[in-house]
Image (cartoon, rainbow, N blue to C red):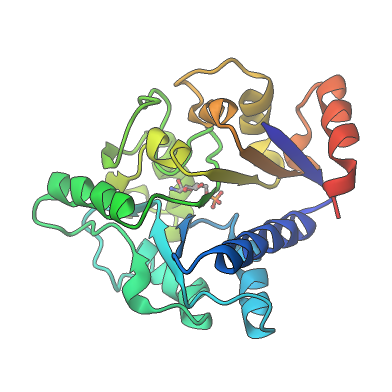
Length: 264
Ligand code: GLP
């Protein structure tokens, strides 16, 4: 696993955006097959989305031949609800880039048969040729997508019950009212994420310090699903200084030394 500790969130976000744009451009130079990009919601990726929008408007990268798959969606929120992940993605990213709306895939949390929706989503990913790069954030308790603690590390897309901790953390988007937060979500599994050719997880701010510590120094365990990244051949964790704040000094120095050249 690589760990890139950037000075701040802005630099980490810019690095991730450039990395993604370069990966899209590299594939476009090699083949006409679309680039398949896995995407998260949350406050963490906002800077990366802003920078990707800028790179798109500047002509550095095009999303015309990119297919996206989002990580998760709440169950039961209408698509047009301000806090649905559909709304979030269109407002913060898709409306501002040259993506073909037909290439956007987001789980339907209002599907009549939720299990079938999840199975179909896996098939759609497979049909697109698999995910080239999955970008993700991490919850304070180390969850990736909505793979809460004790999710199976071999899980695939499915219905998940949200933990009380996640409901409390996410209630900030629902006027602070935990009762407004959906109790269920559809989410890609840990194995769905780790099946991508490349995985980048972003972690910014002191609230993510414990998740970064467990993700890097902790033992592989379903207790912290982020530790699944340790088993990926091309896993990259992008942190800022506050998120790296609970690492041992030696761990911190090790990654700073070996990654120095990439921290631009
Ligand atoms: C939610 C999402 C995750 C996200 C996490 C952290 O639980 N399902 O994909 O990583 O929140 O959110 P934030 O980036 O706002 O801290």
